[in-house]
Image (cartoon, rainbow, N blue to C red; front, side, top):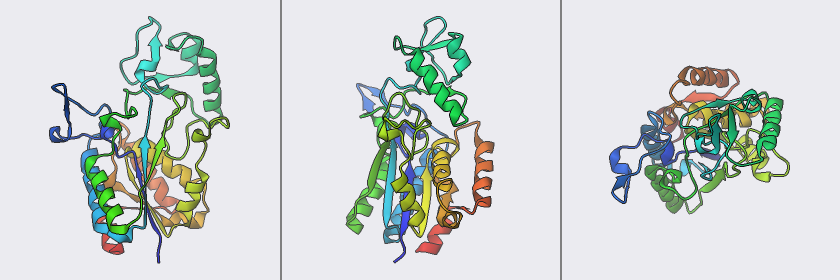
Length: 281
């Protein structure tokens, strides 16, 4: 029997451009996703439809969940500007900014730790921290899986008498964590930041590993790269990207198009859910 693995990355409310009917009211105020990506709600509907239609043709499902504390290195509210005012928009912060005291963390006496973090970023050829709105905070509506994707996963569990594997990533508030498989900077003292080699091995050994989720420009692409860069070339042909089940953060569309081209040239299959369903059903 063929082993088909579905990998769902960050299909969570905070990343979705949800219609009003999907957003609850709390104390009379309707909750809105904090980092919604255009097209992501429709992506999630297609993910849910794919799970439902594929049925037992999919043998295993991993669902990764971006998971953060309110106070997190990647959130606006972690940082102050040179006037000691909290940041209010997406901001690129470099080590030169820190040394020039243009930005600093709210936490007293943490500048040295931040500088050390930048030194580690440079070792993996990254030059900045990007701040975002508070998103996927533990326990919030935004942290929850899109309701249609969750319903499809629940039905899959019931029909196949197997369990979906839900995996949190990003819990360490001192580490940026885009890829589902490792933090931007791996820290040997923090196991949750290290590359999940057992999952990479599982994906490589599956007859087919299918990637979907949000956002194609960031968390999805970094996850796929962490798989592709850590498996044999022959195993790359078993990797599949469903382009209609993911969307790019606005402004990163061209970067995403080039990523799909790069993956195709590396041997990864780039296709759509309808095409793949017609083959596996």
